[in-house]
Image: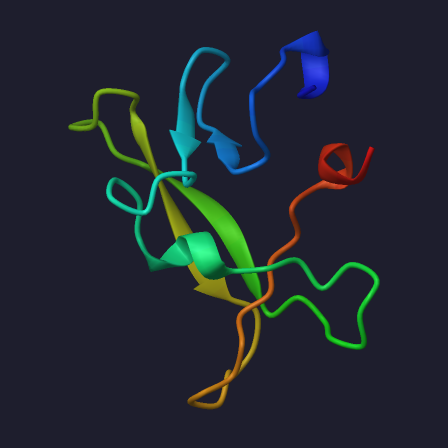
Length: 88
């Protein structure tokens, strides 16, 4: 369940608004960001973040980008914080 008690069928959603979810489940309709893992419980640290950027031309008024926290050498795996709700 997402915050607020909403349920989703899977764990690969980024909640853009209370009614819109960016879904990374289907490889045919998502992109390579679907392969970014969370470092939770591993020896690695998260090295990228989600950032929301205002996009007035967008249907939802914003876009979601992946932003590096620090320099990431070529060939490195990307890790992002899925949020506390993911691990419940």
